[in-house]
Length: 109
Image 1: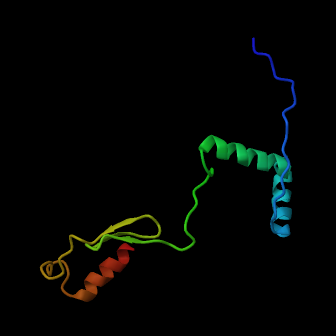
Image 2: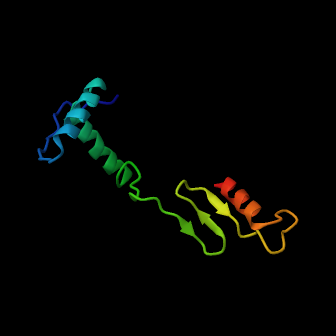
Image 3: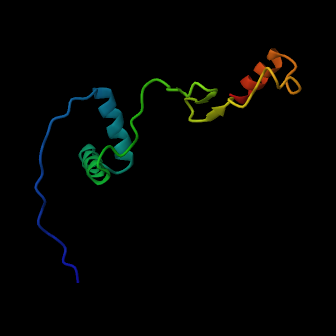
């Protein structure tokens, strides 16, 4: 039989500087969830400890494309585009001119 710990945990206070509008909006959302800002911050800190880092991905502000230099690249949406197997000089049966090939390439993106 497990015995519940009735001893109240110690707390630590700290100050956070934030935009007042962001704080107000967050408090309204949290209130609708039945939580206080303090409870939400406690939950966030516990998640950091459990995850060994932030509980969400941190990404660059600007889209990043990775190009291998051989005709393949990963676009900002994470999709691999592989044009390395297209030989515009020899695949004239499929593409009778560069314009049609460009239309096909543009349709892929």
